[in-house]
Image (cartoon, rainbow, N blue to C red):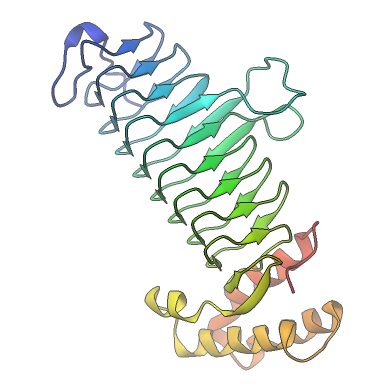
Length: 275
C-alpha cells in the first residue's frame, strides 16, 4: 500500500472521490483510486493503487483491497459475518489485486472460530450477486458465475470455475482447476481437475477442455485421465485408488506436481470426496 492517500475533499474524476461519497477520515485510499457517487467507505478500509469503486458500494470493517481491482456498483464488502456467534471481534476481509467484482456481491469478514479472515486472491472474475461468507479462502484466477454462494469456511482453489446458482456447503473444498456446472449442490469436497454438476452432485469427468486451455501437456493430461479412472471408474476403494495414483509419476514424469496436488487434496478432505 502506497503512502499517498487522498481524502473526499480532493473531488471527483480519475483517481478521485466523488463529492457525494462518504469516506471516513480513517480510511487509507491511494491517490489513484476512483470512488463513485454515494459510495460509503469506513475507517478500517485500505484500498491500493488503481482500484475503482463503483456507485453506491459499501466497504466497511477491517478490509484491505489491493491494486487495480474493479468493483462495480452496489457491492457490499467487509460487513459483519452472518454467524450468530459473532460478537463484534475485529476480524478481517483481504482482497488481492486485479479482481473484477460485479454488481451486488457480498463478501463478509472472518470469525474468531476460524482464521479470523476471509481471503480473496488475485485475478478473479466474480460475477453479480456472488456471496463469499466468513472465513472463506478463494484462490487466484477463479471464475465465480452469477449467484454462486459460498457458505462459511469454504475453500476454492486456483483457476476453479463455479457455475451460476451453485451453492457450496460450509467447510467444503473445491480443488484447483475443478469446474462445477450450473446450479450444482456442492456438499462434498471436489478434487482438483474434476468436472461436477447436479443435485445430488456427480463427477462427470476430467475438466479436459479447461486444462488444455491452460497449456497442460499431453503427458500431464494422460496422467490425470488415469487418475480419474482410478478414482471413479475402476471400483477401487479410496485407499487403493490413492496408492495407484501415487505410482503415476513413474510413467508420467511431467505430472509429478499434479499428482502431488491431487493426493494432498484427498488427504486433507474432511467432508469426503464427491465420488
